[in-house]
Image (cartoon, rainbow, N blue to C red; front, side, top):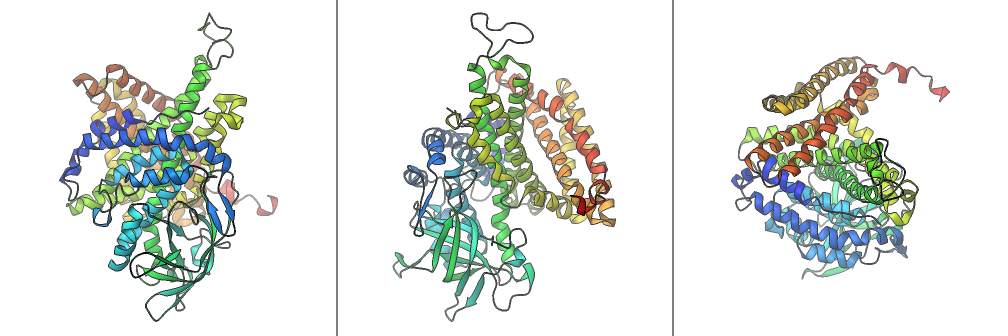
Length: 597
């Protein structure tokens, strides 16, 4: 059976020692926020995930969702767990208190999301989409729409979706055919079909609010003609109660490889009534408010599943007896040694741990900058934070889901044949993790976004700003003797990254295929550097706090340093190979005759 332990201590380390969360109290609306408050929220969320959500994970996967005559039912226990989760205020954790939210910093939404996704990714999808839709409506909708819909979304009374994809139009949204015909009362009649709609129909909430991309009759061609509309499943009566159905129906649910407890639906809109969100023909702007948050959220799904897989793999490796250690017998009273005594098993476990803890730190780093971007009273600080978030969003989405999937495979491999058997729970993590590399924009799309949009922006301003932070951390860590070697590794990788960036940029200006050919390896290279940056920062904190008498005992900090040692010596060397691949250019790919594939 799988096991899960919420990373309460690691988040306490990050939120009270590594990062300056105390500064959040200087931002408007966060005056009562303290590091200890954030740590206490983590502890409560961890308990909820371990005791309420995690026990439903395997049964939800085995049962899946059911669809009959347009009605979708979630697995047994999901409705009750969702209500308990919503009633405790977790959906509205970082939502505006003016509309029923808790008003906590954005960083806490993503911290809690990791644990929720680790405990039960399928169930996490229902509140996750609602949180993203809340923010989109909050930013772009009229005051009337906000007042009508946001309070019920913040409490989980109503949930929400994002309706983008059509059967013929995935990434290329300019091809959508869903139509919006203006009505005399200022609304619009929406008709069309959307596919792959997460939480598009279910029995967890009384109403479902769909954010739908559609085209008005006078829409320009392509993506410049897309508008966004709010389309509820049920219309409301003047007194606020639910009224008549709104021409929205579920045509079917998908039979998927993973996340089987999450309803992925075909949704039909048949002259459904909808209201414009944002400006006419500017729906992509509104959509990206939700999509950028979704991309961070999907990355964190990869992180959560990697952590869940790690805990189960470690528990198994401690108990499973197979063979003898190559360096001598470690369990003389037993017929064999625990497999955790074997070097290659340890290598796999350390790979998982080093990724998880480094990625978790990068999550907090990025989410803290989201709070800076939206709450700091300093305009320069907001602009600086926005640049860092823009640069790191595709990295977190793609790198975290790539390595999250790799970690779940390592976890399964650790269990050997038992990993392949359903009752041990590990094969579910592999199946659940695979979708993260596809939805919210495939990882190839993320790489193209990074290389084609983020790197050239402002003449390379985004990467320059981030490189400066990395250099500052290298300089600070070099003042600590035991960190000099790690700092040198990161400095060398950062320098090589700059060289590769220049080479790729110059080639891409002459031939666009150069950007496409090197984008995925480039993103992975930047991901290694970004997590290395976080590991160096965590190491410096661990050394300083150990010397000063921090929250944890010396052994805890030593374990952090030992994990970092593995990252810098066994994982960072991949940067050299990635650099070589990017610098090899597009020719080996493009010159291959397409009729020979």
